[in-house]
Image (cartoon, rainbow, N blue to C red; front, side):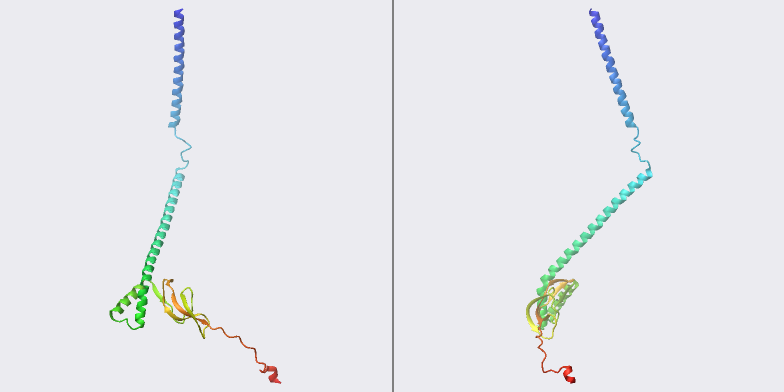
Length: 211
């Protein structure tokens, strides 16, 4: 009886060993098949035409370079514009601070006090401002322009058809067409013509003159 049990146990162990061996063999076969698939080149991933693939890569790189170049050009233009605006703003600020000096120079010149060393200094100041595009405007007889002139008073005047600067209290200044101070003036308004009276009843008409 014991011998039969031992034989049955050995048979079961042998069957289990055979099953394990089959599983290992199947696993090895699957692993080998996967390795073989991995080792084989992927025909779908390879370009059909190497020349076409190279041309595509060149076109992509060229487009990238063109985009970078355009961005750099736009950046350089923006930097140059900002630098020019900053420089112009600095010049305008300095010129505005020098306007009282120019007024004093003009007043001294009108009274004949601008002589000697003071005249040399005044000439250098004017030359420096002219170099940076500063120019004065506003003279008696100019047509009044609200964008250039600031009216301080008004007065009637004969023989004018438009509002005119009758006197200049303070000249104006501008830089490159940009007004940094308007000219302060007295303006003359055209006189309104009186209403024309009715024709005299005593005047002869052409028909009466012919009778």
